[in-house]
Length: 258
Image (cartoon, one colour):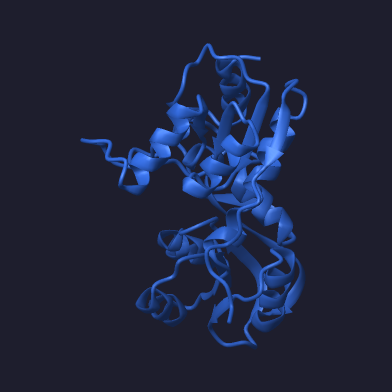
């Protein structure tokens, strides 16, 4: 199968036209007509994952997080981005990133995250004007009524993470909750307006959490990696029958608990 055929499969689920203006999704490096036998699936594109893909003989990397968010004016091999690009080219590896398209796609990352946390009757928080049924964040009813303390434990166990950070009264009753994979604190006011008593997201700033709690919504910061690591499962299901060998990254969360 060719690189462009792999791209078609992914974009049938998550069109690159769903990408936010600041995002850099799509085929970022490589030849669209190159044959692919091994595909490496990963959350992050960094020197560790690129080198692992090369060592395992991958022809193509399918990643959630892209490289080159902004414009590149130079490729310096002493810098992180330069090292990544050099390794991709030297090892003839194509790189495709589906970032905000997979975040916002129907049955994409945010839908999967909501399912993992047991949310039902979900609605999109920030709808995408380009495609019906797509958008960022989800709000849904919890399968059972829980306190914030209980729901935080549900999140921690569902995401298999060693810790979560919780803001709000532990006794707050949670009947309806919101999710935003990765850093989605900007969606908190909209989640509250849609009836959520708590929002699960990541990368929360101190004062943003204070403002959220004072406005009447609790926050669970479950970490960037834990809320997005399931993207490789999505990629795997999409590409399961493409005829290529699928290789899953062994990357870990950049944060640990000491």
